[in-house]
Length: 353
Image (cartoon, rainbow, N blue to C red; front, side, top):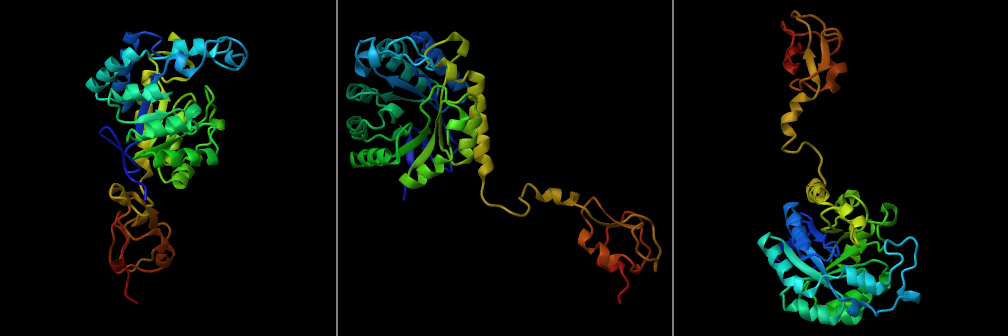
């Protein structure tokens, strides 16, 4: 049986509203003031958590701008630069972490981060993070997985590019190293991702296969994919977030703006509320509407002994008479008393035969 996962003051599970994470990534554009403004905007939009990334260019790669270290893919948002320069531009200075964490606490946001090497884990432990996120590109870095799991904190792992065999190995290592709660996020590691390449039907399969919570790390535009993911049982939604895409930045092109994040929070919760359970028959809320069904009514004044016909007996609203299924039974029969127009049909109106 899977154990309940708790992050900060939030329980993660199917009986709770989706846990919405705003990913700042490099959208601070190397301004601490902008980073703090992103925190404020995420809180105002109703997000539950804000996530950072903790690395430096030197912990990610080496300073070369040639061969595999040069981003030459013409379809990449970052084409024409080097990996090192990209990470220099995108990284969140480590000295900013404490003030960002403090602002999150002030605004009621859970704050945590994605470490990319062991030094980042050691640093984040000094900030008492409530959980850790593992990025898709690191989900096969088993030494990093062990290091994070050994902290005893819950782990959220993006599954982008990973095969079932690789995920099985990652999950086993995390659990064996002490991870107390695991959440796997379906992720497509393209930027942006297309809905057609997102395959969110994987989410319930992840949950069942690895006996853990499952969600979505979403790089598509808009909120539709995330709402659909909740309908499939996603309990965590992570989206990149910026103040304004027009301001630019390494991840701005596929990030939500404040109004969109607010819509995401509202609509994913509505999707979760709508799931309910398997239900037939009127709900408590529907019972007052039963009177608006059709039922059989006398629609003309008729005298005792007169025959019921299609002209004086019809199925109309409201629903206070007998059900329309009895119409054929009554047609051609005689009434036992005078009946006024607008009287709901009932068995007592017939002669006893």
